[in-house]
Image 1 (spheres, rainbow, N blue to C red):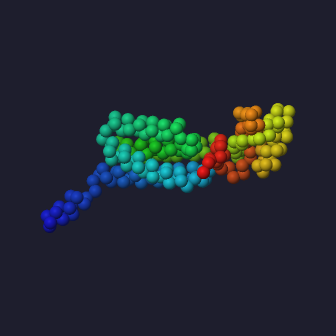
Image 2 (cartoon, rainbow, N blue to C red):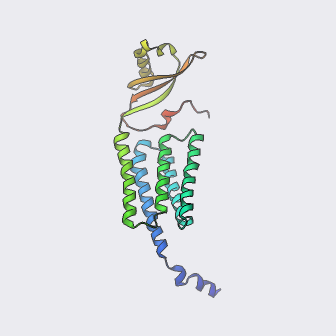
Image 3 (cartoon, one colour):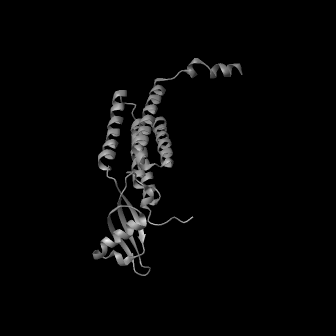
Length: 223
């Protein structure tokens, strides 16, 4: 028993190797960058705590998987990264509940975690530079490409008499009265003459400048 504890708590078992030190530094960089992307770019417009939780834990999990299991295997690491993208691609096209913006951030954070997990051949400065470039790309997209205050929602509409082009202003006024929104434009989609229903795509002024995933629902969930 004494020999067991002496071996367990020996200096050789308690020392931290250079690889572990580099792993800890890379993990800190990956986690901090992931948190910054989610906190300062995704969450202000998305306000989805469930995806906040998912993004952070998924990023840490993928980083540890790549760093510990596939660090020495270059070909296998690339194959594993492509496999992760394929898995999430299947989830995206087979799941209606994951909005495209959330899935895009998911792909981005997977790529970020894989790059940081396979960064053993890079210096600390190079790793920080790569992460900085990725963060700048997200900042540019959120600041310049999605800065519009126009929101969009799908509306199942029952008064198909107003969808005629000559009654467009009446349609717009009716929707503003029902929804209580300042509507910019309306696009008419599928029309069901049997039930007198049509699907409208309504664009409106959104002073909050938030991306609301509920606006993208085509039907009211049951249960």
